Length: 266
Image 1 (tube, rainbow, N blue to C red):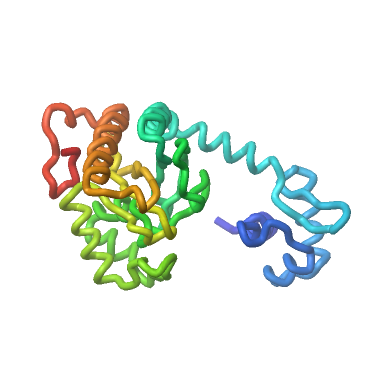
Image 2: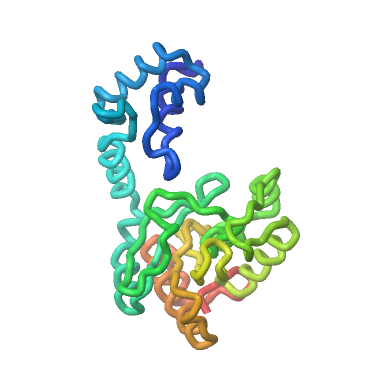
């Protein structure tokens, strides 16, 4: 089936905008995509007419339009997982005062599909719709740890273990050791590996097919971490994940716990 170049180019324009490029001039857009200005202008005019792009009349710079927010919210609200897990995230966040997250795997990165901030909010990196590296985050480790060897090999092929902080895992062998630990314990930690000053614990969420479909996590200041806090947090996360998994059809949880090898709710 042929690729429609004009559609692809329009989508490529939208992909240029991120946290570091919130506004772009037409010359920047055309240069980055290798397009002549007239082509870029026609594409931007079309996107602007449909509210996917907006333009500052004073500076002439372009930025993402509100239509993307509308479409994005529609997709997120359509996701059964997010809807099913919402009450559990809110309850856990209110009970602990900490920030809770719901994250899914999208190719080689995790993506935040929900976040509930408690009074003790500390993490600034996370945001609904934002991606998170699988090697530096607790949620990423959980999402990868239960993959088959074939899936794992494919996922980590030419993977870039770039450092988010000075504590980030930087090589494949150490990462695989970490994943094995996650699989044994049924939870993962991020000890300032993704964001300085922030400690995070994550556990898996299962569906009816016994597959890990998401990660549930809680973040809090590294200064508040003690053995007791860690133990209590792991237990609360596993109990909450168990509730969500049950709603997704994972009916066997109350009848028998999975053993450590399969990352069960212990």
